[in-house]
Image 1 (cartoon, rainbow, N blue to C red):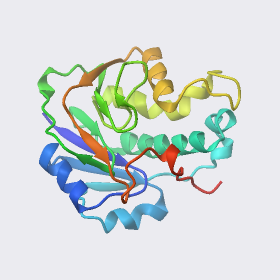
Image 2: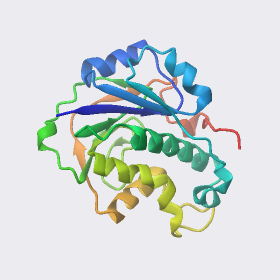
Image 3: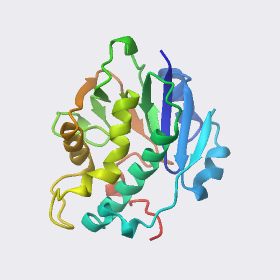
Length: 221
């Protein structure tokens, strides 16, 4: 089986986080996509990156997403998935499965999973989340997950397709990104299953709680 690790957005890690991925997840081909002004940070990191893709610039105000969600959580979510879209669309299609992680996750247990047993129409996400604790199925853990190229391509389309239809009144989101992504996957007939016993914590330069409790990292608009 050929496996790739996908990262996206600003670099917010350190050597111990990188080493925890190597020790507990594995040293897979690793790809990242980021906006041009973050590229140097990734180049200077100790990640053994197969390739860095440059995320295309975009006027967020011209997007359907911004029309429906122009608050700080909405903008932060857009850039998260805009960067992720580009790495998914750009990475070679030669891999059987792709692992999506974050560069601020400190992995604390082994990823014990049989890739041969995975379904190519299912997204496998950790049952544990630093954000909301144990995943209960009403939302999706978008911090760490595994999917085939088919599934990941649908995840990539979330940021451009979800608001092609009226999901909620303008600036009145009825759900978080985690719930909206789960809804989108269900619309595309993608199942979601749990990865058991994978534990990790967040360490964004010492910050270990969700961004909503600190400050969202936003781009200029």
